[in-house]
Image 1 (cartoon, rainbow, N blue to C red):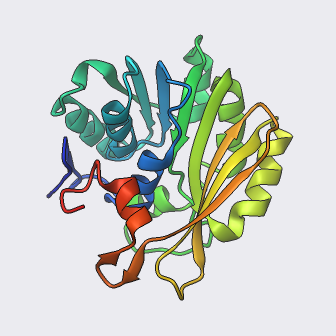
Image 2: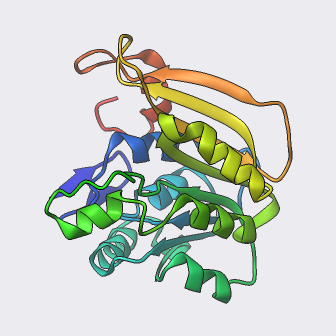
Length: 235
């Protein structure tokens, strides 16, 4: 079971969280204006974010962190099968233990965190762990980012829109300030469902945008096509 993109493929049969719109949006939207030399992907899953950033940047050091053993092994497999295997490395560790090991900060940190905080069960333990933020609470994520991010670095993430205000408030308590926000909805009549957020240690004027994915079923808006066309085969 693999998902083919223009420049790489993702095998995902052993990963609880499959390739989805959230990851592709985040990997395409994260700013690379500061030409990051080192990138960290927290909670890598299939490794899709790291692979997208390997395609988009010349960063010679792209590291990923994955605590689930099956997902970790699959991530390594996806890295090794790509054209950028020499720039990609995955650690099998939790964020707290990883922080203890790291000396050099990262220019860009990216994370598509687990965020179904509601106590819902799909009957699949790995999937529930990947989706529910008990395994990586937002405060733990943000504290980790505040310790691992270079002083001029950027942190990009995607969360449910309803969590946006509280997440930004929490980030600010760790000295991280929002620079850009992209709010996403599925179609013109739908409610905003996701917020893509970019933070840095500098307070600056906030740039806010909105993106609609589809005009109607399988008819994608031009802004969505522009954002994702370097990756999706059919864009």
